[in-house]
Image (cartoon, rainbow over all chains, first blue to last red):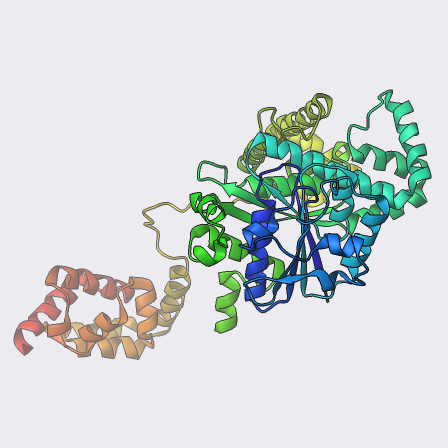
Length: 308
Length: 215
């Protein structure tokens, strides 16, 4: 059973590619078959995190030449079980993906048969990114404990949420509900996607019910990256609580990943962080998160019960 | 999932209906740390109107639940509308803090004491006490015989006197080298004789005499 995990987050520089590459390494080391897909189109650099230089094969070949599956353009990395589908050799205009190309990529990703497919997404909330993020119900987003990141994260979540609503309702119904909402609030903007859900539930209970069940299927997970010791330790849990209270989707906080200067060093020297510093606190944090993703993560209390 | 505006005061603060005033104020602080204007957690999540509404709701919930009179009225309203169980109206007996220096005997002392009194009442204590007081030297064996003839076991003696069983045994078996210092021994013997309602000074004197003779 393939688990596809898009890794996104509104803000650039929050560590999406770093976490994607290192989670990939950790999952592969657990013996899982993992493929990383660099979907930060126009800003792809995932191969650098994996100390690969100029991949010969990649997404470009899949889009232009007649490869049948994405699998054929995956290249092996220095880690066994871990492959990469790079997009660095794509054209400079790849950032503005054609709709048909987007659908082709999404269809191909859904056909990949690995244990884990990790999608490294770019920053921002353009439709390409939102649609890639919604490939799976189990999207993962990265937050850093800064107002700018929190702000972008909420924008991102709301954008994803709204995109999902649009997908469920289909274009025509969506537009009519948006118009109704605008007439009611006398506001040309939708302040929050929850308002739209309310309107739908009130006006068309049947559609409202469908919308709710579809939205409840979403299980977002998030990681607090670049966590420093001055940060409130309960922050992640509080965000989890807040989001669970105000959205139908489920949110799960996977853990803090502590800030480490050496992350910069490893990128600078183009080494894989997990290989270079496997015993640092940050590496342990990453391992915990990987454990939670594979759900083999057991807390110490459970372990003692099992062993006794 | 309920809409935020429809949550009752307890749900808004995320506490069970029976929460104590301390829990209420703690929950209020927690809620403010999430929803307050300067909180990083909800930064840009709500616009000003939404945040105002939520903060007003939290404020109202807190002010209602922290005031005992307002809270009772509110609880009644909840029960009437069927939102809460009737049990929240009756105040639960709260556990009081345990004092650091507990001087009271454990509760089961009374039970054992009653049992022992019953056994003693069934026997002719006068005859038994005369027997023990017939000599002015009283050994551990005498005490043991007395105890066994009344039918009390060491566990019961321990429960009442809180003198541990090995020490009681040493007293009864005349193992003088295992006995505690005299000052403690005297007190132990006093508690021991108090159980049988015997004159403690005579017993202590008699036992000390036997110690000097036998050792």
